[in-house]
Every structure is written in C-alpha cells, then in structure tokens.
Image 1 (cartoon, each protein chain N blue to C red):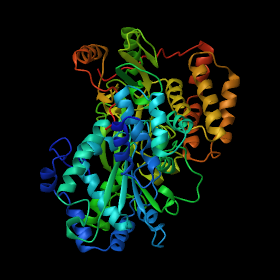
Image 2 (spheres, each protein chain N blue to C red):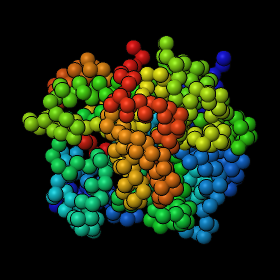
Image 3 (cartoon, rainbow over the protein chains, first blue to last red):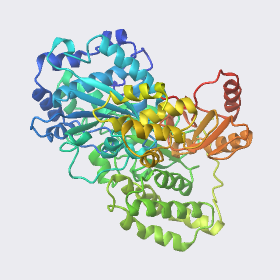
Image 4 (cartoon, each protein chain N blue to C red):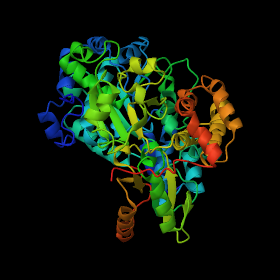
Length: 429
Length: 164
C-alpha cells in the first residue's frame, strides 16, 4: 500500500531543512513570495477559508473564519503562534520546530500578511530549549535574507517576530492562558467572550494559530485551496500529522490524509502492534480524548468522524494500548496529569480533578471501594462543562470511556486488592 | 540590582510593548546564573517591571520550570505520562531513584542531582525519555542511564536551566 506523500514533513530525516540554502532549494519561501508579491491580504485569507483548513492545535476551528473575526477598525493586531505543545501523546510541533523551522517562519509571514499583523510572537514551550535555539537561528537566517523584518522582499509589508519561551505549564497551550503568559502573568485562561480576535494580547485584536496550521498555510498558498480541500473529507480536509506512540512497532509522526481508518494508521503507517499482542484501546487525540477500542478500528481519522464517536481528533496524539496495558493504571496516569496541570481557577477542575485522581490512584493501589466507582460514575456531569476552559472538560473522557468498556478491570482491582494483570509494561524489545 | 542585570532586563523589556512581558524571561535569565529563582531575583524583577515582589512570587510559582529553592546542578526530569509509562518509564524511574538515592522533587545531599517526574515531554516516539538540564535523552534504559550519568559527571559545569 502506498503511503501518503508528506507535505509539511517532506524532507524531514532526509535533508537538513534548518539550513536556509537547502530550504530555499527545496521550494522554501515560494509561498511567501507568491503571497506578498502576487496576492492581496484578502485573497490570501480567501484561499485559506476556501481550503477548509481547520486548526491543527486541538480545537479544529476553521482557520480562515478565525482570521475573519478580526474587526476592521484600524487597531493594531497581533499574530501569536502557539508552539506550546504539551498534550500527552503529541510530538509533532516539536519535530516541526527542530527540523523545519523555516517552514514555520514562512507560514507565519504569510499569515501575518493576511491578517495585517506587523508584530508576531511565537510561544515556545519552556522544555523545548533546543528547539527554541534552532528556531532563533532560523529566524536570524530568514531575517538576513529579507524574509522577515522591514519591507520584506522589498514589498510594503513588514513583520517583527519575537520568540517567547514558556516556563512550564500545560495550560499555556490554551490560547487565552497563552496571552496572559506572554503578558507576564500567571497562565490562567480568560473568560470568553471577548474572544482574542476582539480583545487579545495587550487588549488588542489577536489571532492565535498552531505551528502545524501555519505550515499548511504555506502549501495552500502555493498549490491553491482546491488542492487542499480535495484531500480527505469535505468538512475536515487536508493532510494532518498524527503522532503515534505506545504499543506499536514503529512509533513516530506520520502525515496522513485525513479520513483514513484508524486501522490503517496503526497497521500501515506505524507497523502494527508488537508481536503476539492484541489491541485493547487507543486514544486518537491526546490525553483529553476518550478512548476507542478494537471494535472502533474502522473509524475514519478526521474531526467529524471522531466527534461522532464522542471522542476527538484533538492535536493528533494517537496512543495505542495493547493487552498488557492495565486500564486502571492508564487512567491513573492521565487523571494525575490533569490534576497536576489544572491552573486552579475553577473549582470543578481544581477540586474535582484532585478527587478523581485520588480515587483512581486508590483504586489502582487496590484500596478503592464500590463507592468510589459509583462516585466516578456520577462526577462526570459536575466536572464537565463547568469550567472556563477545556482543561476541566478533559479530565473525564478517557476515564469514563474505559470505566464503561472495562468495568471488570476496575472491579477486579477492588476484589484483588491491586492489579490482577500484574502489569509489567514492556517496550518493543 | 546589579548593573548587568538591569541592562539585561532593559534589553528584554525592549522586545515587548509592555514591560511585564519581560518578567518571566528576566527570571529565566536570573535562574540561569543563580541556579534557582532567588528572593533577590524576585525583588529585582518586581522593580524592573513595576509589580510587587509578592506578585512576582505568585507569578513565578505558577511555572514548573522556575525553581523557588536551590536545586541540584544536574536537573533530571523523567517523563511519567502515558506513552512513556506504557514503555517502561516506571521501571526507569525506580532505577534512577535507587541509583541517586533521592526521590521525586528531591536534591541529593551533595547538591549535585535533582530528580523530578514530569508530565509529557513530547518525545513519546522515543519512550521512555528524560531531560537533563533541558537536553533531551531518548529510549532511556537503566543501562543507558548509567552511561548518561557518567558522561554528565565529567562534563564541564553548565547552567542547569539555560535561559535561551
């Protein structure tokens, strides 16, 4: 079976795309040249809107529509580039940052031109020190060749791009928390509305886009909206990088056309399961997504098909769990994650997150009770949908899905006073 | 505040329309030099951007990569989230803790090593992974950790938390 020919991952692992000469020789900055020299900002926006590109950071909101929300009132506006990748199971933005930073810069310049931003900030996760160094070098190289800065390529468009390093906080991937963080505050999400398009960074109109999204903008401008729109399902088109990890033979980033079955991603792209193992569960869209199971292997990987299964594509963090994985252990790991990362503003997320994490830890240790299971069953409605931002809504989906599918595993932990699987997670070896 | 810090602070402020945006980058810069965010650094930061030291502390306490007390010269942060956990992170963690004789969030008595179990580092395809002074190490087995440890100990001293 022929795998999809990569678009934004093209050349990664084969040539050194951080070298600006190599990048230029391989089609680098062609999209930027076309946009700035041959297109108006409105026609760039129209192209992106017509492509039906949906944001690759997690929420899947149509990029062109997001840009269109900016008021035309003459106020300064900002582009904020979200490279705060921290959704468990997702490792695509870090790869793009380290291996193809100039493509990100090209996408940034085109997008800033479209929305009329003269100032952009890229928020790079604090842990990505190496990536931020690579990006700064790329930025210097791009500036020296006039792809950034004053009067880019002798056009009237100027753009300044500032690198802002995070300092350790998952929540700063949420767009309004990210704005707070750039403003030098605690990264606590804002109450919306107003949305960033109206009152964003420093109170001014702001667009926040993910780095993968911006990489696709470059190619949409080069090849046209129709090229992109015709890949995959109509309402959820285009290629997307899926980060596949866990119990597969070849964990890695794979650029797929949206709409392929989950089975194909696991078997054809990621090399299938480890020898002698059977599939137990998989998370299609990071820690925030509900698990799917062996009976769901034919689900199409795209925003709407996964949404119809009450889970989500999210950021594309695809985690595979085979029969050696204990679901209670997996749920404990993920509930502890959300407990740790709650910013603490909203009571249901802060307190509920702690209760849930403690109950699941208790169950895993064999000290839980039937009462814990009853509470976990009912707590969903009091945590989910009652918080300012999606973090609180992310605590329950995985846990609720495995509780429903494998209730006997939870019950067995109570009955055995611990894990009956005697799980020893083993790697590929 | 030392003239050097003031100068760096002003450079950072110049990147942004509002001075407070330089607060976290300034604390990162101070931490690189001092090994952690000292009380003096918080006072300096407040003075620099025009907020109280209490506000600086509140902000600094939000971020896990800003250390409010002295930590080891080697900061070892091992991923504990799902993908690494599925591929041996738990065993690696136990091994490192035994080897270093310290637990989660602890610094060794000689001040050399700080150990922490952290959330997903975005290197799930090379699990289990860890960071040493923010540098990634992949597919870390106990044997591989022993080799890393030896290499770190012979390295020339470097900042545990580089700012940029």
